[in-house]
Length: 353
View 1 (cartoon, rainbow, N blue to C red):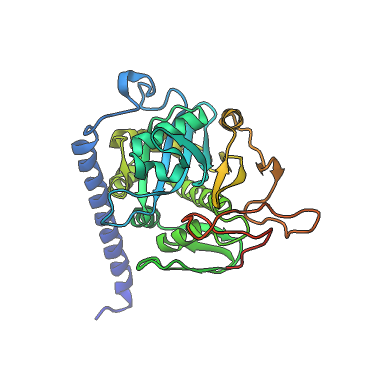
View 2: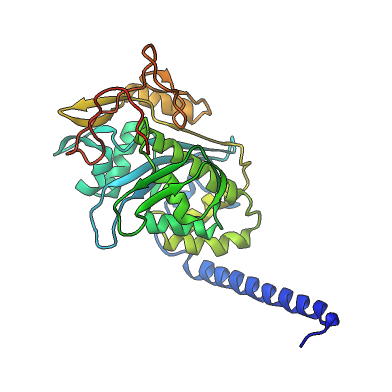
Protein backbone atom coordinates (compact mmCIF):
# COMPACT_ATOMS: atom_id res chain seq x y z
CA UNK A 1 0.00 0.00 0.00
CA UNK A 2 1.05 3.61 -0.60
CA UNK A 3 1.54 5.88 2.39
CA UNK A 4 0.88 9.64 2.34
CA UNK A 5 4.37 10.32 1.08
CA UNK A 6 3.67 8.24 -1.96
CA UNK A 7 1.11 10.72 -3.31
CA UNK A 8 3.78 12.68 -5.12
CA UNK A 9 5.17 9.42 -6.55
CA UNK A 10 1.74 8.45 -7.89
CA UNK A 11 1.33 11.90 -9.46
CA UNK A 12 4.72 11.64 -11.13
CA UNK A 13 3.86 8.17 -12.46
CA UNK A 14 0.57 9.51 -13.82
CA UNK A 15 2.33 12.41 -15.52
CA UNK A 16 4.86 10.02 -17.04
CA UNK A 17 2.08 7.76 -18.38
CA UNK A 18 0.24 10.75 -19.85
CA UNK A 19 3.46 11.98 -21.46
CA UNK A 20 4.15 8.53 -22.94
CA UNK A 21 0.63 8.32 -24.33
CA UNK A 22 0.89 11.80 -25.83
CA UNK A 23 4.27 11.09 -27.41
CA UNK A 24 2.92 7.84 -28.80
CA UNK A 25 -0.01 9.66 -30.36
CA UNK A 26 2.22 12.32 -31.85
CA UNK A 27 4.63 9.71 -33.15
CA UNK A 28 1.76 7.89 -34.83
CA UNK A 29 0.68 11.18 -36.36
CA UNK A 30 4.15 11.92 -37.71
CA UNK A 31 4.51 8.38 -39.08
CA UNK A 32 1.15 8.78 -40.82
CA UNK A 33 2.19 12.20 -42.10
CA UNK A 34 5.49 10.96 -43.52
CA UNK A 35 3.96 7.82 -45.00
CA UNK A 36 0.68 9.08 -46.41
CA UNK A 37 0.70 12.85 -46.79
CA UNK A 38 1.91 12.51 -50.37
CA UNK A 39 -0.54 9.77 -51.34
CA UNK A 40 -3.38 10.72 -53.69
CA UNK A 41 -4.03 13.61 -56.01
CA UNK A 42 -3.34 17.00 -54.45
CA UNK A 43 -6.06 19.35 -55.66
CA UNK A 44 -4.99 22.55 -53.92
CA UNK A 45 -1.29 22.36 -54.74
CA UNK A 46 -1.58 21.50 -58.42
CA UNK A 47 0.84 23.80 -60.24
CA UNK A 48 1.22 25.93 -57.13
CA UNK A 49 -1.82 28.07 -57.96
CA UNK A 50 -3.42 27.93 -54.51
CA UNK A 51 -0.70 26.93 -52.02
CA UNK A 52 2.12 29.32 -51.14
CA UNK A 53 5.75 28.34 -50.55
CA UNK A 54 5.22 28.36 -46.78
CA UNK A 55 2.33 25.89 -47.01
CA UNK A 56 -0.47 28.44 -46.66
CA UNK A 57 -3.20 29.46 -49.08
CA UNK A 58 -2.71 32.12 -51.73
CA UNK A 59 -6.42 32.86 -52.15
CA UNK A 60 -9.90 31.76 -51.08
CA UNK A 61 -10.68 28.06 -51.43
CA UNK A 62 -14.17 26.56 -51.37
CA UNK A 63 -15.02 22.98 -50.46
CA UNK A 64 -18.39 21.19 -50.58
CA UNK A 65 -19.33 19.54 -47.27
CA UNK A 66 -21.79 16.68 -47.81
CA UNK A 67 -23.75 14.89 -45.12
CA UNK A 68 -25.34 11.65 -46.31
CA UNK A 69 -28.07 9.46 -44.86
CA UNK A 70 -26.06 6.48 -46.09
CA UNK A 71 -26.50 3.00 -44.64
CA UNK A 72 -23.51 0.61 -44.55
CA UNK A 73 -24.82 -1.55 -47.43
CA UNK A 74 -25.79 1.37 -49.70
CA UNK A 75 -23.75 2.47 -52.71
CA UNK A 76 -26.27 5.05 -53.93
CA UNK A 77 -27.72 7.49 -51.42
CA UNK A 78 -29.43 10.84 -51.05
CA UNK A 79 -27.52 13.67 -49.44
CA UNK A 80 -28.90 14.99 -46.15
CA UNK A 81 -27.01 18.27 -46.03
CA UNK A 82 -24.98 20.40 -48.43
CA UNK A 83 -22.74 23.20 -47.19
CA UNK A 84 -20.40 25.30 -49.30
CA UNK A 85 -17.47 26.08 -47.00
CA UNK A 86 -14.96 28.76 -48.02
CA UNK A 87 -11.63 29.52 -46.35
CA UNK A 88 -10.27 32.98 -47.16
CA UNK A 89 -6.66 33.67 -46.05
CA UNK A 90 -6.87 37.37 -46.95
CA UNK A 91 -9.86 38.21 -44.72
CA UNK A 92 -9.17 35.26 -42.35
CA UNK A 93 -12.84 34.37 -42.64
CA UNK A 94 -14.65 31.04 -42.97
CA UNK A 95 -18.00 31.22 -44.78
CA UNK A 96 -20.59 28.44 -44.48
CA UNK A 97 -23.46 28.50 -46.98
CA UNK A 98 -26.19 25.90 -46.46
CA UNK A 99 -28.04 24.71 -49.55
CA UNK A 100 -31.47 23.26 -48.64
CA UNK A 101 -31.82 19.67 -49.77
CA UNK A 102 -35.14 20.42 -51.49
CA UNK A 103 -33.48 22.99 -53.81
CA UNK A 104 -34.93 22.51 -57.31
CA UNK A 105 -32.26 22.08 -60.00
CA UNK A 106 -32.15 20.90 -63.60
CA UNK A 107 -30.27 17.63 -64.15
CA UNK A 108 -29.62 16.44 -67.73
CA UNK A 109 -31.61 13.30 -68.42
CA UNK A 110 -33.80 13.78 -65.35
CA UNK A 111 -35.57 17.11 -65.91
CA UNK A 112 -35.94 18.97 -62.56
CA UNK A 113 -34.98 17.20 -59.33
CA UNK A 114 -34.22 17.98 -55.72
CA UNK A 115 -30.53 18.65 -55.29
CA UNK A 116 -30.28 15.98 -52.59
CA UNK A 117 -31.03 13.27 -55.20
CA UNK A 118 -28.26 14.31 -57.63
CA UNK A 119 -25.61 12.06 -56.05
CA UNK A 120 -27.96 9.05 -56.08
CA UNK A 121 -28.88 9.61 -59.73
CA UNK A 122 -25.29 10.33 -60.82
CA UNK A 123 -22.27 10.70 -58.52
CA UNK A 124 -20.56 13.11 -56.12
CA UNK A 125 -18.43 14.88 -58.78
CA UNK A 126 -21.64 15.67 -60.69
CA UNK A 127 -23.17 17.02 -57.48
CA UNK A 128 -20.08 19.21 -57.00
CA UNK A 129 -20.47 20.55 -60.55
CA UNK A 130 -24.17 21.16 -59.97
CA UNK A 131 -23.44 23.26 -56.87
CA UNK A 132 -20.82 25.22 -58.82
CA UNK A 133 -23.43 26.05 -61.47
CA UNK A 134 -25.98 27.03 -58.81
CA UNK A 135 -23.66 29.29 -56.82
CA UNK A 136 -21.20 30.50 -59.44
CA UNK A 137 -18.33 29.52 -57.12
CA UNK A 138 -15.44 27.24 -58.13
CA UNK A 139 -15.17 24.29 -55.74
CA UNK A 140 -11.81 22.60 -55.07
CA UNK A 141 -13.33 19.33 -53.90
CA UNK A 142 -15.83 17.63 -51.62
CA UNK A 143 -15.81 15.99 -48.20
CA UNK A 144 -18.64 13.53 -47.59
CA UNK A 145 -19.52 11.78 -44.36
CA UNK A 146 -22.39 9.61 -43.19
CA UNK A 147 -24.00 9.48 -39.75
CA UNK A 148 -21.29 7.26 -38.26
CA UNK A 149 -18.51 9.38 -39.73
CA UNK A 150 -20.17 12.56 -38.46
CA UNK A 151 -20.31 11.18 -34.91
CA UNK A 152 -16.67 10.10 -35.10
CA UNK A 153 -15.57 13.57 -36.20
CA UNK A 154 -17.35 15.18 -33.24
CA UNK A 155 -16.06 12.59 -30.79
CA UNK A 156 -12.52 12.99 -32.14
CA UNK A 157 -12.75 16.67 -31.21
CA UNK A 158 -13.97 15.74 -27.72
CA UNK A 159 -17.53 17.01 -28.29
CA UNK A 160 -18.96 20.46 -29.00
CA UNK A 161 -20.85 23.06 -26.96
CA UNK A 162 -24.28 24.05 -28.30
CA UNK A 163 -27.14 26.18 -27.00
CA UNK A 164 -30.12 23.94 -27.85
CA UNK A 165 -32.92 26.43 -28.46
CA UNK A 166 -35.82 24.20 -27.32
CA UNK A 167 -36.73 20.69 -26.21
CA UNK A 168 -36.57 18.29 -29.17
CA UNK A 169 -38.07 14.83 -29.42
CA UNK A 170 -38.70 12.65 -32.45
CA UNK A 171 -38.55 8.94 -33.28
CA UNK A 172 -36.71 8.55 -36.58
CA UNK A 173 -37.45 4.85 -37.02
CA UNK A 174 -33.79 4.02 -37.67
CA UNK A 175 -32.33 0.93 -36.01
CA UNK A 176 -29.37 3.02 -34.89
CA UNK A 177 -29.72 6.71 -34.03
CA UNK A 178 -33.46 6.06 -33.85
CA UNK A 179 -34.39 8.74 -31.32
CA UNK A 180 -33.88 12.47 -31.09
CA UNK A 181 -34.21 13.52 -27.45
CA UNK A 182 -32.65 16.82 -26.42
CA UNK A 183 -33.47 19.35 -23.73
CA UNK A 184 -33.27 23.12 -24.05
CA UNK A 185 -30.14 24.90 -22.86
CA UNK A 186 -26.38 25.23 -23.25
CA UNK A 187 -24.75 21.82 -23.09
CA UNK A 188 -21.83 19.68 -24.22
CA UNK A 189 -22.86 17.30 -27.03
CA UNK A 190 -21.00 14.15 -28.00
CA UNK A 191 -21.19 12.80 -31.55
CA UNK A 192 -24.53 11.05 -31.10
CA UNK A 193 -26.21 14.08 -29.49
CA UNK A 194 -24.72 16.48 -32.05
CA UNK A 195 -26.17 14.29 -34.80
CA UNK A 196 -29.58 14.46 -33.15
CA UNK A 197 -29.44 18.25 -33.09
CA UNK A 198 -28.23 18.48 -36.69
CA UNK A 199 -30.99 16.13 -37.93
CA UNK A 200 -34.00 17.66 -36.16
CA UNK A 201 -36.45 19.32 -38.57
CA UNK A 202 -39.86 18.69 -37.06
CA UNK A 203 -40.90 22.26 -36.45
CA UNK A 204 -42.34 25.25 -38.26
CA UNK A 205 -39.84 25.61 -41.09
CA UNK A 206 -38.85 21.95 -41.45
CA UNK A 207 -35.59 21.51 -43.42
CA UNK A 208 -34.92 25.25 -43.55
CA UNK A 209 -34.61 25.34 -39.75
CA UNK A 210 -32.44 22.25 -39.92
CA UNK A 211 -29.96 24.05 -42.19
CA UNK A 212 -29.61 26.68 -39.45
CA UNK A 213 -28.93 23.96 -36.87
CA UNK A 214 -26.27 22.41 -39.06
CA UNK A 215 -24.61 25.83 -39.24
CA UNK A 216 -24.68 25.99 -35.42
CA UNK A 217 -22.95 22.60 -35.29
CA UNK A 218 -20.28 23.61 -37.81
CA UNK A 219 -19.57 26.85 -35.94
CA UNK A 220 -19.18 24.82 -32.75
CA UNK A 221 -16.81 22.44 -34.56
CA UNK A 222 -14.81 25.42 -35.83
CA UNK A 223 -14.57 26.79 -32.30
CA UNK A 224 -13.10 23.48 -31.12
CA UNK A 225 -10.67 23.39 -34.03
CA UNK A 226 -9.46 26.92 -33.30
CA UNK A 227 -8.34 25.73 -29.88
CA UNK A 228 -5.88 23.33 -31.51
CA UNK A 229 -2.97 25.75 -31.59
CA UNK A 230 -0.16 23.31 -32.28
CA UNK A 231 0.66 21.44 -35.47
CA UNK A 232 1.27 18.07 -33.77
CA UNK A 233 -2.37 17.96 -32.69
CA UNK A 234 -3.41 18.33 -36.32
CA UNK A 235 -1.11 15.43 -37.25
CA UNK A 236 -2.92 13.32 -34.66
CA UNK A 237 -6.45 14.40 -35.61
CA UNK A 238 -6.30 14.43 -39.39
CA UNK A 239 -5.70 10.68 -39.88
CA UNK A 240 -8.73 9.99 -37.67
CA UNK A 241 -10.83 12.48 -39.60
CA UNK A 242 -9.70 11.07 -42.95
CA UNK A 243 -10.93 7.63 -41.87
CA UNK A 244 -14.36 9.08 -41.16
CA UNK A 245 -14.94 10.78 -44.51
CA UNK A 246 -15.02 10.16 -48.25
CA UNK A 247 -13.24 12.92 -50.15
CA UNK A 248 -11.52 13.71 -53.44
CA UNK A 249 -9.10 15.95 -51.54
CA UNK A 250 -5.78 14.51 -50.48
CA UNK A 251 -4.54 14.33 -46.89
CA UNK A 252 -2.13 17.14 -47.80
CA UNK A 253 -5.06 19.30 -48.94
CA UNK A 254 -6.90 18.69 -45.67
CA UNK A 255 -3.77 19.54 -43.67
CA UNK A 256 -3.26 22.81 -45.58
CA UNK A 257 -6.87 23.87 -44.99
CA UNK A 258 -6.69 22.88 -41.31
CA UNK A 259 -3.42 24.73 -40.73
CA UNK A 260 -4.82 27.90 -42.29
CA UNK A 261 -8.17 27.71 -40.48
CA UNK A 262 -6.57 27.13 -37.07
CA UNK A 263 -4.91 30.52 -37.38
CA UNK A 264 -8.26 32.32 -37.70
CA UNK A 265 -10.40 33.80 -34.92
CA UNK A 266 -13.49 31.77 -34.00
CA UNK A 267 -15.61 34.91 -34.23
CA UNK A 268 -14.78 35.25 -37.91
CA UNK A 269 -17.06 32.44 -39.05
CA UNK A 270 -20.23 33.48 -40.89
CA UNK A 271 -23.11 31.29 -41.98
CA UNK A 272 -26.43 31.54 -43.75
CA UNK A 273 -28.91 29.54 -45.82
CA UNK A 274 -29.23 30.07 -49.57
CA UNK A 275 -32.37 32.26 -49.92
CA UNK A 276 -35.40 31.04 -51.81
CA UNK A 277 -39.08 30.22 -51.43
CA UNK A 278 -41.25 27.19 -50.87
CA UNK A 279 -42.69 25.68 -54.06
CA UNK A 280 -45.28 22.94 -54.49
CA UNK A 281 -45.28 21.04 -57.81
CA UNK A 282 -47.97 18.34 -57.92
CA UNK A 283 -47.78 17.88 -54.16
CA UNK A 284 -43.97 17.62 -54.05
CA UNK A 285 -42.12 20.27 -52.06
CA UNK A 286 -39.18 22.18 -53.49
CA UNK A 287 -36.99 25.07 -52.45
CA UNK A 288 -37.12 27.50 -55.37
CA UNK A 289 -33.95 29.49 -55.94
CA UNK A 290 -33.59 32.28 -58.50
CA UNK A 291 -30.31 31.41 -60.32
CA UNK A 292 -29.33 35.04 -60.92
CA UNK A 293 -30.20 36.11 -57.38
CA UNK A 294 -28.39 33.07 -55.94
CA UNK A 295 -25.10 34.03 -57.57
CA UNK A 296 -25.46 37.62 -56.36
CA UNK A 297 -26.18 36.48 -52.80
CA UNK A 298 -23.24 34.05 -52.84
CA UNK A 299 -20.87 36.73 -54.17
CA UNK A 300 -21.93 39.11 -51.38
CA UNK A 301 -21.78 36.36 -48.78
CA UNK A 302 -18.20 35.46 -49.65
CA UNK A 303 -17.35 39.14 -49.14
CA UNK A 304 -18.81 38.95 -45.63
CA UNK A 305 -22.24 40.41 -46.45
CA UNK A 306 -25.04 38.23 -45.06
CA UNK A 307 -28.81 38.54 -45.28
CA UNK A 308 -31.65 37.53 -42.96
CA UNK A 309 -34.11 37.64 -45.87
CA UNK A 310 -33.95 33.92 -46.51
CA UNK A 311 -37.60 33.07 -47.19
CA UNK A 312 -39.56 35.06 -49.81
CA UNK A 313 -37.31 38.10 -49.18
CA UNK A 314 -38.64 38.32 -45.60
CA UNK A 315 -36.71 38.46 -42.33
CA UNK A 316 -37.28 35.18 -40.47
CA UNK A 317 -35.34 33.78 -37.51
CA UNK A 318 -34.80 30.23 -38.79
CA UNK A 319 -34.22 28.77 -35.32
CA UNK A 320 -36.92 30.74 -33.49
CA UNK A 321 -39.55 31.87 -36.00
CA UNK A 322 -42.26 34.12 -34.61
CA UNK A 323 -45.60 32.56 -33.75
CA UNK A 324 -47.97 33.07 -36.71
CA UNK A 325 -50.68 35.72 -36.64
CA UNK A 326 -53.39 36.55 -39.20
CA UNK A 327 -51.33 39.53 -40.39
CA UNK A 328 -47.99 37.69 -40.28
CA UNK A 329 -48.33 33.97 -41.04
CA UNK A 330 -45.37 31.63 -41.26
CA UNK A 331 -44.43 30.45 -44.76
CA UNK A 332 -46.26 27.37 -45.98
CA UNK A 333 -44.20 24.17 -46.14
CA UNK A 334 -45.58 22.00 -48.96
CA UNK A 335 -45.24 18.26 -49.53
CA UNK A 336 -47.16 15.00 -49.22
CA UNK A 337 -46.75 11.45 -47.93
CA UNK A 338 -45.19 10.33 -51.23
CA UNK A 339 -42.53 13.01 -50.96
CA UNK A 340 -39.69 11.62 -48.79
CA UNK A 341 -38.52 15.12 -47.90
CA UNK A 342 -41.79 16.70 -46.95
CA UNK A 343 -45.42 16.37 -46.01
CA UNK A 344 -48.65 18.10 -46.90
CA UNK A 345 -49.26 21.35 -45.06
CA UNK A 346 -52.89 22.50 -45.02
CA UNK A 347 -51.95 25.97 -43.90
CA UNK A 348 -49.61 27.99 -41.78
CA UNK A 349 -48.83 25.96 -38.68
CA UNK A 350 -46.13 25.06 -36.22
CA UNK A 351 -45.20 21.38 -36.14
CA UNK A 352 -44.86 20.30 -32.54
CA UNK A 353 -42.10 17.74 -31.81
